[in-house]
Length: 112
Length: 115
View 1 (tube, rainbow over the protein chains, first blue to last red):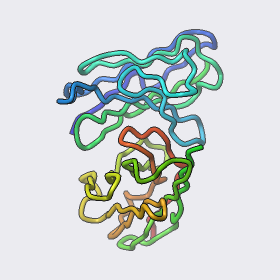
View 2: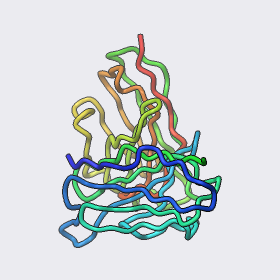
View 3: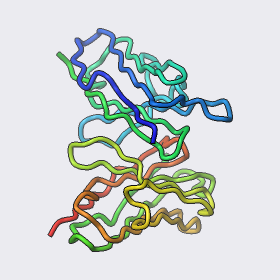
View 4: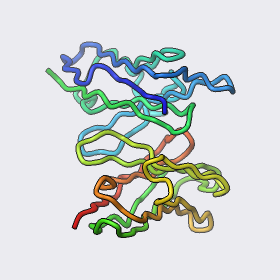
């Protein structure tokens, strides 16, 4: 199975400051169809996961533009340009290129 | 508005069986593959199973293969997960999610396997 490794595990951030989460896969996530199926999800406390980003860098409808995704191959990053209080929660990357689908262990974003 | 509502989660003894349901609305159900994903208490997300739009193809995590069966009834806009030979480690909040790339999730239903 493809192992997804996120860092850091915990990310204390000052309101208004940027934040960055890394996600590394044990194999390239480039599919034979040319796409890279790497998603990012946000799970606020007590809520269901919500997809933020699909195929590395495509923001879902309604997702603030302070969220951005980048990367290629095995290295991916989720960036929040200016953290707001509502961004507190756990963030997960997920690969959909190889079976089975696998998630990273999660990064907990909290306010300092 | 896309809505996914899971139900069927209860407390069940080890070795027991359970059927989860997910009622879908707000989109053309039979256009989309559907997933089950679970989350053990205080833990991360674990993909469980996927079914194609027509039910013709199904996929399972190794941890549930041979014990769980995913199915759907497109006439009822419903997704199901039949869970047999349940173990303590199956205790989790079970989510259904829409589309191959999991664009919408339900609120989850809690399955507790305990004697």
